[in-house]
View 1: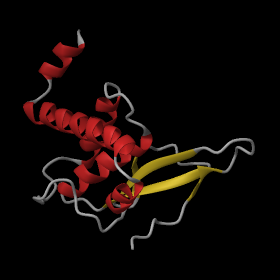
View 2 (view 1 turned 60 degrees about the horizontal axis):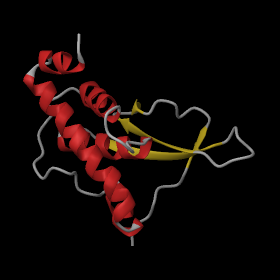
View 3 (view 1 turned 90 degrees about the vertical axis):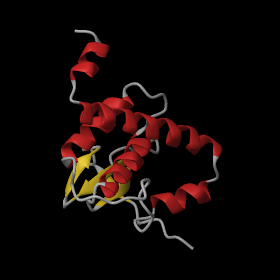
Length: 143
């Protein structure tokens, strides 16, 4: 079955979620290259507002949001773990879930610096589940 047929076979709510995730991934991926770090530091803070202004109460299961972000990332250039984490956190928070971005550095590698971003939601890692072996960095403060 072609990718287009698989996409069209999805329920409309999941197609919409997938397109929303892809659009936000494209925006954030491009924005990370174009906008200053101070803008993104504010957006990554836990108290930053969600991307969508309206808040709802769990209209979509958190696992489906994680699925949509991961699936869309396969088709969006530059959708790194950080981009995916930022999109997932925004979509989860706009759906009423308590979600936060975690950043960590690889403690196993001594010869090169490697970092990873993941999302925790309701006490569990929901996206970017390879956080084992990464030492969490302190939360980025906002001034």
